[in-house]
Image 1 (cartoon, rainbow, N blue to C red):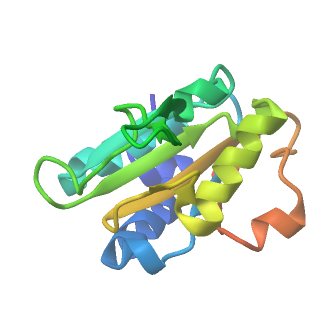
Image 2: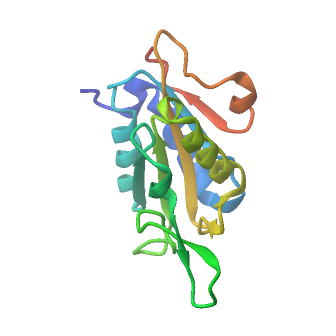
Length: 165
């Protein structure tokens, strides 16, 4: 196991999360690129824990559309969406917000990628709005130096390459 974030190029990740938490609702989402199995998600969890904020991890590879909300008929007879409890509805138990991690995003079904990209670009999806105190982090795990995310997408994010591929 690595002794410090600098051992894994995680210093950039820590700085990116800290800077984004200064003004979460106006910060670019963070795109982390790493090799599978190196602990990038655990690093994010450690950073969040050290900062005293919550981390929510959504495994996009196994996610389904229903994981992001299901339709229901409201009391006016109209269709609306019931959102899952995993999506935050406030700024956490301590009011500091947190980090929502969309893990394995490059391995997700195209419909899930569409939902995640909508959330990353607008902080909204199908009537749901991510509370202001949350930073969005996408984790893309590639093989042989390929994060699976094109350069056009990287321009929309604060890009952190852990350099472990």
